[in-house]
Amino acid sequence: MTKEKLALEIIQRLKKEYPQAGCTLDYNQAWKLLVSVRLAAQCTDARVNVVVEGLYDRYPDVQSLAEAPVEEIEKIVRPCGLGKSKARDISACMKILHEQYNDKVPEDFDALLKLPGVGRKSANLIMGDVFHKPAIVTDTHCIRLVNRMGLVDNIKEPKKVEMALWKLIPAEEGSDFCHRLVYHGRHVCTARTSPHCEKCCIQDICARSGVEK
Image 1 (tube, one colour):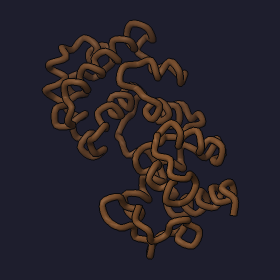
Image 2 (cartoon, helix red, strand yellow; image 1 turned 135 degrees about the vertical axis):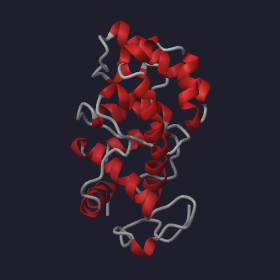
Image 3 (cartoon, one colour; image 1 turned 180 degrees about the horizontal axis):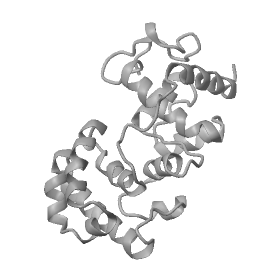
Image 4 (cartoon, rainbow, N blue to C red; image 1 turned 90 degrees about the vertical axis):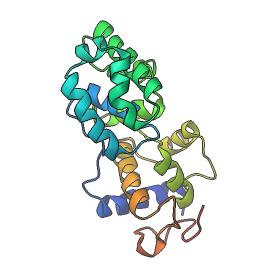
């Protein structure tokens, strides 16, 4: 089976297994997802979802967060880890949104990459979830799983994995496919234990089924 055919088959099986898969960060406005994505670095989405409640109670919009003292932001987001750098990036990012984009998140990939603390993974998440544009989000689950499945061959650098997947995954499927990889990676193809291949929906076509990587 070619990688292209393998990718399409995996997409269909994961779609059946996780029909409602979506972003596990809570947000109701684009700028809030931008904040949450920065806080999620080396932190669980579940913890981020709790922490941002306090942040938004105190600073309910882009302007108020842009004007907030960095030290006050840091106090609130500290439970997510790396509080100083995350608070600095969030503050700088909100200032740019307020001063240059009328409190809106830019609908442009390159413009997103220029925002403090925003890398390709975050920019792709915003493009896919907020603007419903083609996106490939190469988080740790994605990188681990596509290597195990045989969609990429021992590639660990996020951008290289992203570029390889763009050649295999139909543009309209990319964002949802990556969300489903997160669900599959958490519950079946796990990182901290051996993968649970016996209950995997793609066991028979996975390149490394049963082999811990």
